[in-house]
Length: 274
Picture 1: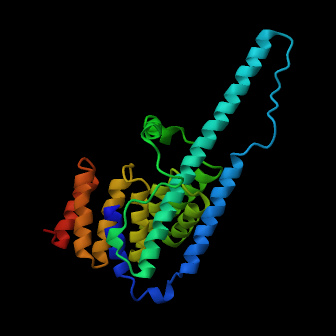
Picture 2: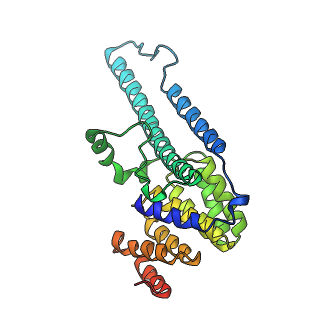
Picture 3: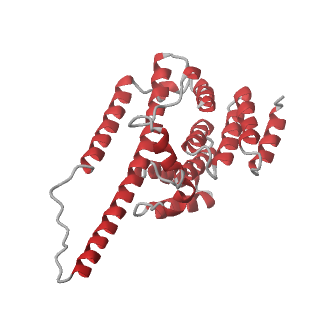
């Protein structure tokens, strides 16, 4: 979060002339908070029952009834796991959005961006036992978590456009992906690719924001080293040399075995980082 606040402060420092055409009022932020509140309430309604359970356990023998009970338990277990995964994704996305809103509120009110702390997890902090329960299966979650219908296809379509050098189409498709699939496990990679597309269009400021979103979305994930390097590189191009050097230096500290370390070192040398 310290890096995120520092980098965001650097990006904001370059937007003085752009604010006239990219202003956001407190009313806009209040509207976003209202939309987020509605989404949370809709999720709570999904956790409410719609009537008495009616499993069909009628059968002609005890063994058949046991089999029916086991089948029903398996069905309920699957539904519970799916809801658990969905809630976790919504909580993660909601927390990131609240953090972004907090930053924009401080920006509008003229506060100290560096004083921003860690955003409180949506729904309240988890206790230690709950945290341990979630962390244990975490290594296998990316392999078992299901994607929404069309999610992979939309991501692949945008990736193909980026590979072809169609930056305009890729940026638009990846922006739609972020809107259509909030909290997606593919979000960090999608934001990284969106930053690359915006970079290809010459929009370095927005590219830096996309790289930051990629890194903060999963600061320990497989694309985090590349996202952090690209963020530092973009800051250097924006003239924020001091922040760029700090960001690039974090690559080797956080990911000493990553291939991005070499690129970050070369970029630091080019910028004259001490």
